[in-house]
Amino acid sequence: MDGPTLLALQDIDIAIDQIGHRRRRLPELAARAAAASTVRTLTDERNAAQARAAQAEADVATAEQAAVELGTKRARLEGQLKTIIAPREAEALMHEIATLDTRRDELDDVELEALSRQEEAEAAAAVAAHELPAAEDVLAAAEQALAAATAELDDEAAARAAAREAAVAQVSAADLAAYERARQHFDGVAIARLDGARCSGCHLDLARADLDALRALPPGEVGECPQCGRYLTAG
Image (cartoon, rainbow, N blue to C red):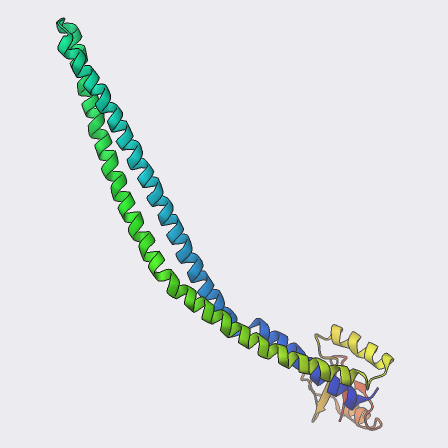
């Protein structure tokens, strides 16, 4: 194996992995998510308040219609009362009229309560609607910032991909296959440098005999870390 060539490829792959790591943790992602959440919350609050206001308005209309019907019925009963002579029949009509009056009072209370709910809901909807445009502006700015940050990473990733293609061209098919297998097995780091007496892959020191054996290899040749099993080169 050609240690320096594989190390160059490894450095490129690490840089590509780091780009992916940075992409997933862009602060612009969190900012966009927070702004989108605010817009969703305000939109939901506005829509819910508008729905409550519409329901309250419908309740007012229902109460008003019921009151009209009660008034019509009461007027009819009063007309009948004027023509009734028998005391018992008159008493029954007066009782029915009193019942209608009680029901009308109840409808008035219902209508007032519904009007109050309508007013509160319309006020809540107005507040959310007032705040929504500013929140949408913040979201638009956050999306633009995220797009710019993503485009920058895309450019960097494209440059690294081109460099990787050139590096891969310098590696034999057998070495590349072995490198890719080791990279998959060792969480992306297939080959490590010897840093003094330490493997830069697992960060453990090698025994003297292992160091001597590694340093005795021909220049550029690759050994293996006795601690972690990664390919290891002294230079």
